[in-house]
Every structure is written in structure tokens, then in C-alpha cells.
Length: 556
Image (cartoon, rainbow, N blue to C red; front, side, top):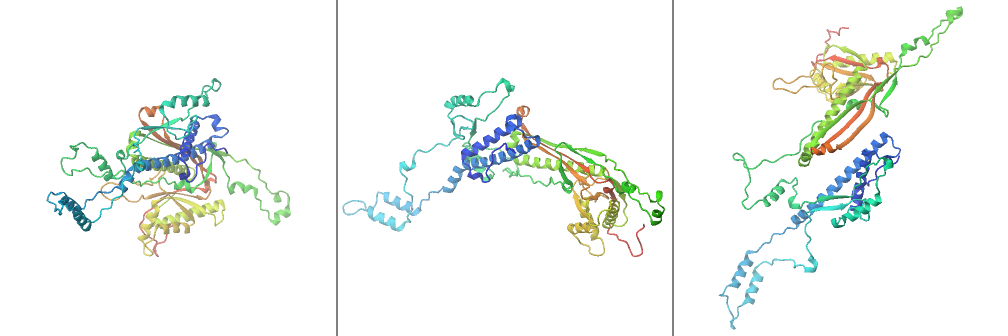
């Protein structure tokens, strides 16, 4: 498959400034042509390949921009870092200063010729005062002309300019001539192709702030830079009472939510390029009953109708279409807030993706519940006892109806808190009271299922989540657990891929100084197994630790 973007080396440090700028320009141009759906650029690629190429281009482009930003930041901080590392405070030794003052006094002792005994005093100075070593002053030729710090906007050439190397600063007085030459080389859109507008990146302007005007994460350094710009009076607004100094701002926001997808990950995924799948409805053993004939020896001896064997004709299976469902996410932010508080934008984006995962997982649970036979169990003893009893019954029933091998693996989807409930339930028993959640997983595996713990809740029935805690008594576990049981492979995750536009800007958003982050997934669940293969169980539970006594048997 043809690639739309140039390859990027793993070690970006191997790139020269010109190569880095050229790569960035090529990625910008490529992403613009993908957005405009330039047929010449896209060639024969299909929609899925274009999306995949756009994803690769976006990832490479962001990596290049991040690396360039690192270089720019290092260059901007270079002067300040060098000044801080090479700063030397001039120290005047007190003995030297005192002796120098004595030499200048008028009453200095004189020799026989009336001259001041400077030589003697110099010997005293050298003998009594420590020597202050100073580097020799550099010659004017070595110093050269001091370059002025560049604080204005610098116009830098892109890769498309005629006769100019990418990354080279442009002289504004020659810019018109260069643009004219470039436009002749690129040509103009003809009327034959509908007058389609094509845009090319020709130059970019960057303003480099001096080091003393750049605020970093170092609060003390920022305070020094701000104090240096105050007027002579040094007045500032502070609180009138209590603490006079402003408190330290914490911009980082801890993120506790996760975008994990345990339900999706528990299913086998199949890619659906055409927006869904069309699966057959399988039959069961009962539908093949008429294909089997049992003839005794006596009937065979009688012959005729007594020995006639039945033969079952094939009936074409029906099909069920399952189209993907769109689950999108979109957030809109202000440009100014994104620049002033990027940590907040990152936090909100992570929170949005966690909520997208919650909605998508709830949708998959609803689909599995709809496609399963819904049954119930009642509370008899304790959570662990009742749940293990229900699981073993359900597995045995499905295994018989489908006539599966005793070694066939079954999958159970349970709410994540059921493991905690079982830990507390076992702690109330008489023996082996303290177990871990990992031990609970082992107990479920010993019961014949591979457990997957979902983080969210189906939309119907007793919620499998917890409401916001209120002051008062601590909220308890739900007293009803909803769980699914099916052989591995009974359900598949229909994966239509995702559309991640990332950062979106248009004329409407630009007019309000905003931008958006947008993406969506296309997914669903389809059942491949017969209806009797899947159970959705609603069980009433109580972590009482109660177990059957020797005199009280389970009522059957």
C-alpha cells in the first residue's frame, strides 16, 4: 500500500533543522490534502486505508512538533541557563582593600630621597593579603561584535519556496519576488478541474521571547523575573488580611478515571469494513433429531416400514444483520484557556474518554443481555455459596444442551465489586476466612468459568453501580448481581473501527476563538451461538457468610 507521508526516523536527533522543517511541512500539506480529499494525492486508497494513513500522519506530525518545541524551548532557555551557570560574584578581600587605602594616604613613610616607600608597601601587600586570581581580559578580536537578542518575529521559509532552502530566514524586501517565482512553479488551478483551491505552506513566522519574558514551572524563578519588571515603587496588589502572599498554585489535576474496556476485551473482535456483519442463526441438536433412526434386529427382520431409515433434508439457515452503532465524543475549548492551563485540557480529555468507555461498555452489556436468555436465582445462604451454585448449574445445563466437551471454556461477565463482596463474605465464615481478590478469581475458575469483571452497568434491572455517597450510613453493596454466562466465542465484538479527527478548527470555531476534540467509535455485539448457549442471570445475594449446617440441608 502506498504511504501518504514520508518516513520519520526513530532518532529525531539525527535530523538537521532543515530536514525537520521539511518533514513538518510535508506532514502539514499531506494532512490538508487528506482533509480536502485530494484525489491525486489519495490515489486508489479506500476509506479504511485513508483513515489509517491519516492516523499515521497525525501521530508522526505530533511527534515532530513536540520535538521541535523541545528544541525551541532549549534554545530559548539557553542564554538564561548559561548565565546562571557561569555567574561569578566579585569578592573584594578586606585585607587588600585596607592596605590599598593605606598606600593612598598622604602620611606614607618616605625614604631619604623624599619618595614614598611604595616598594616596601607593595611587598607587605603581597606578603599579607591572599592573591585574587582573575582571568585576563579577552582581546577585542576574540570578543567580536555582541549579537543582539532577536526579539522580533522571524519569517522562516517552508519547503515549497522557489530557490530558498527550508528553514532559512526570509528577507521581507525579497519576499514578493520569491512568492512570484514560487507561484509560477506551482501553477494555477485550471477550469477543467472545477477551479479547486490548493493551498501550500510557503513560510511561517515565529516570535522568540527573550529568556527574561518566559515563565516556566519554577515558581521562584518566575517571581524573580516579575520583580525585575516592577517600577521603582514596587507596588503590587496583595490581600489586606490574613496571608499577604498569594498561595502556591497547583496546576496539575490527578486523574482517577480509566478508559479500560473489559467487556469489549472479553469478546473476540471482528473487523466490519462495511458497517456491520450478517451472521447465520445456528440450529441446535434438537433440530437434527429426525436425521437419526434406531432399528432393532426384530424390526430389521420384518423389513418394509419397520426397517425404513429417516433422512433429514437441509433447511437453509436464516441470517441476522448487525450494524455498528456510533458512539461519539466531542469537547470544545477556548484557545486562550488551552494556552494558559494545558493541564486542565488534558484532564478534561482523559475524563471524556473515560466517560466514552463507560457509555460504550454499558451499550455492549445491554446487547449481551438482550441476546441472552434471562433467568433468576434466589438468595439461600451466602454470596459465595449461592453464586458458585448458580454458576455450576448454568454451566452444566449449557454443556448438556450443546453437548460440549467437559474441557470447553466458559466466560462469565460479573460486576467488578462482586470479587470484593465475596472477599467480605468469606471473611464471615468459620474456616479459611481471609482471602484475596485473586483467590476469588481462582475460586470462580475452579467452578468452571473464566471471569471478566465489568466496571459499569447495564441500563435495565438493578443498577450494578454506586450512587454518590451522602453523609450518614455507608452505602452497602447492591443486593442483586447481574451477570452473563456463555461459551467462549458465543458473542463477537463487531468492530467498525474509529474516526479520530483530533483537534478540529474551522471558520465558525475560529470566530469564537475556540477549537474542538472529536472522535467516534463504530461497534456492536453479535451472537454466533444458538440462543440456548447464552444466559443472563439476575441473582439475589447477601455476603452473610452463612453456610449449610449439618442438620439443615439445601431445599431442592
